[in-house]
Image (cartoon, rainbow, N blue to C red; front, side, top):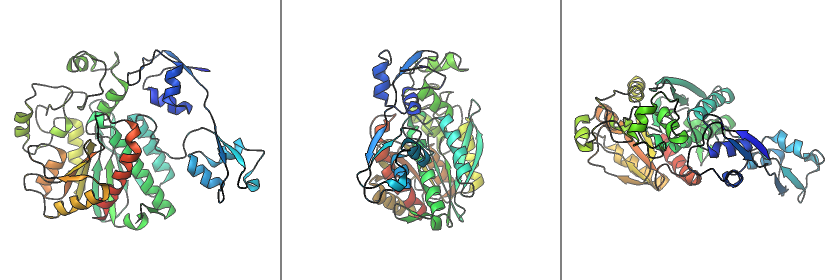
Length: 400
C-alpha cells in the first residue's frame, strides 16, 4: 500500500487515474473520503496497488493491435512479457498487459480541467505538428489562457466551443477527444466514422475553443480553497457552501451565455436576477466579462461560416433565433439530428446567448447543442455514449 499526500488540484478521479486504479478502490482504502466532495489539500491517502490485466492471444493479434486495444505503449507490453516476445505469440498464449498511462493523449477517466487542457494541447501540437495549430484568444478573469485549436486548412471556416458553463465541463472533453480523433485519422489517412478526414480537412477549417470558462470549471471540479483570490465573494454567492457542483457562471458570478449583445436587455428582464451568483446573471453590460469578450472578438476576426456551442443537457439542437437564421439552418439542424439522434427544436424565449448573437450579427447558421441527458455535471459514465452521438454530429456539421 502506498501513501500519497493530496496536492492542489487533486480529485478522487484524478488520483485514481494517475495510479491506474478505480475510484472505488481508492474510496475503499480511505473511508473518510466522500464521492463528489472536494479532497482537502495536504491529507495523506492510502493507495492500493494497481492490478495488471491478463489476456489470451487471439488469431490475428499483433503488438500494435494490443497496444491500441488496451491503450498502453507497445514497449510496455513487450517489457511485461520478456519471456514471450511477439515473435513467439500464438493463439492461446497468455500475456500480461500492464496498467499504465493510455496511449491516447486525451484521457476520459477523470475530470477535465484547465491543466489537462493545456497539457493535451501541447501534446497534440507536438505529436501532430503539421495538422494542429494552438493559440490563446484571450484570458479569463484569473489570467488563464482561453485556448483555441485549429484543425484543417480548408476555405470553409467553422467553429465549435464548449464549457461556457462551468458545470458542463464534459463538453471540453468531448471536443478534445474529437480533435485528437480527427488529427489522428488525418495523419494515418484513415476514415473516422466512415468519413475521409484527410479530404475533409482540405475543404474545411475547424476552430475549437474547448473551454471558454476555465476559472469556473476549476471551481466546480476542485471546490473553493481559502487561498482563492475571490474566496469571500464566491462563498457569499454560493450561500456559504464550498461545494460548487451546480455553478455555471465565471468566478465573478456572471453567466457567460447571457453576455452577448442580442436582446440582452430583454434577457436581463426575463432572468430577474438581482446580482452575481451561480447562474443566470447576465452581468452589468454585454461582453463585460473577458471570456465572453474574447470569444466575440475571435468570432469577428475569423468570420465563421457556421458555429456550434456545446452545452449539456437534453439531447436537443437549437437552431433558430428570432427569424434571423438563414433558410438552410433548419435543413442543417435536421441533418445533425439524423446523425446524432438529437431532436431539433425551434426555440423561443431565450436571448443573449453566443448562438443568438452569431445568428443575429452574421445571418449564418448557428447551433446550440445540448449533449447528453441528466443532471449537470453529467457523470463520466455517460461519456462514451455522449461521444458516440457528438462525433457523428460534429462530422455532419463539417460535411454540411
